[in-house]
Image (cartoon, rainbow, N blue to C red; front, side, top):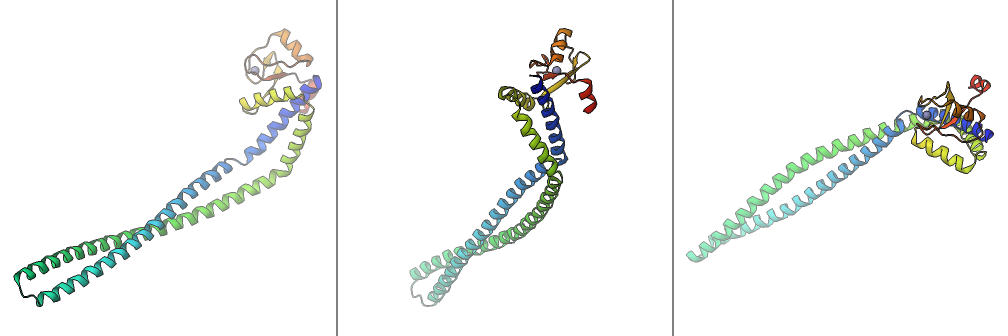
Length: 241
Ligand SMILES: [Zn+2]
């Protein structure tokens, strides 16, 4: 058990170092993820704007077709008007002419509206395209930066990972499981040293009899207050760490 507790202490020290290396990356990974999400949302907006622009153009072509039909009808009826011989015929054609004029006006108004819409959407589409481009450049820069930081610490990180595996292998599975559970729950800190009759992690006082047991290092004792695995460091270890 003593050897295992010593391994746990070392494992905690390795985990602290790994955490410090991880901290060197700062919040770059989160920044990159945030940028990626924003970029995706911008790309979606850009795509939607492009589609809406295409739709507006299609719609304008449709109304332009209608306008042409109305104009042709109007010309035809106006020609017919010169050839009428009865009042009844005259009235009927006049109604047709009015209807064609209304349709022509409607088409012209729609076409004007759509031309305005296309102008607005074209500007917005360009604006979004340049935002997408800028954000992509920013993302590439940040990813490069993170990659450099990772590379700088990679060697060190790998050697700690190796040491971690080695130490984990020397610890009983159920104890290791307990260590990991406490570590995850308490921000990477699962092992606490007892010093001056207290747990150095939570500063709770420990009864002298318990301290004696902990010093013997022959059983797994958890701090009653914070739940960490309590260990005792010899003078020699204190100097080394
Ligand atoms: Zn404690």
